[in-house]
Length: 144
Image (cartoon, rainbow, N blue to C red; front, side):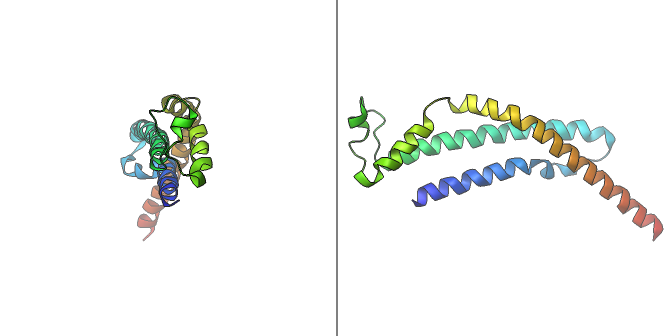
């Protein structure tokens, strides 16, 4: 149970970091010309985080299954589950079903298709916020 909790927490932290990525690149915003550099950097790193997150989800699921005693070299269900304790059999079956279907590279591509517009919107919001903050900061210095 603690390995599953560690896996879930690390997956959640990677996901949150991916969504907060535009805030990490705020120092790149030096002027109007740096907007494209900012957006491209956010897109590249969000793609890398997307790949990392989905690879981690897939790899950690396989590691958990092997931790519970699942045999990847089995030829049928009885050989797959021969070392799995009876109390863990249902949990391993859920993990097995989680990994079936589309592989993690295809999932990463599909997630990035949905993440791309979201990151563009977040980048625009961060850019406008930083621009607004800098304008008011400059006005504050001129008034003092």
